[in-house]
Amino acid sequence: MDTPVDWAKWKPGARTTAQHGDALRALLKDTGVTIKSVAANRFDMLARILAESLDRGDSVDELADKLRPVLKDPQWAHMIAQTETSRAISAAAHEMYSHYGVTKMSWQVAADDACGACKANADAGLIGIDDRFPSGDAHPPQHPRCRCSISPDE
Ligand SMILES: [Zn+2]
Image 1 (spheres, helix red, strand yellow):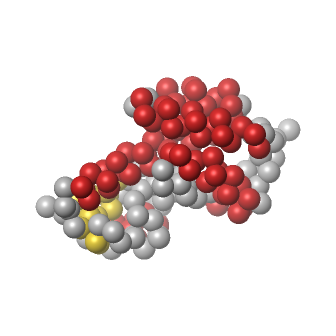
Image 2 (cartoon, rainbow, N blue to C red):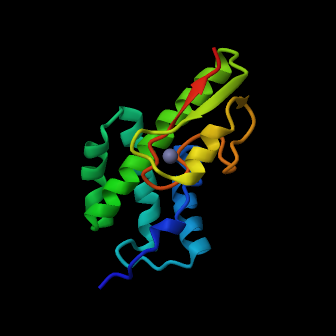
């Protein structure tokens, strides 16, 4: 049997897809979690699948399908797919805003996101493009399955 994982403590940490393997390894160490369904040597494979799939622009379901053989737990595969897709979209938006000289941005809470920290980020209003929201994040996701986004100041 696999050890249950407390995903409430899981926090996305990677800023680029290339860092996913390290980020996943670090977060598991930080939370003291043992996940028997993922052998240590699978993290690099996981990182590669994420990077390639996000580069191709796979949908969340397509990515989840590719993660399943590595992760075994289908729930986890879908959660990772959703969270990492959200990160890729937000990171790209953030990069684009910077590139086009946008100086301020705001946090837009997803309609189905009831997370208090996400609401606090939204309540902060406009912040500098290089600043961090109250949660400490530069952009979503702020928690697993976070589907919030950022908007540029017009
Ligand atoms: Zn959120």
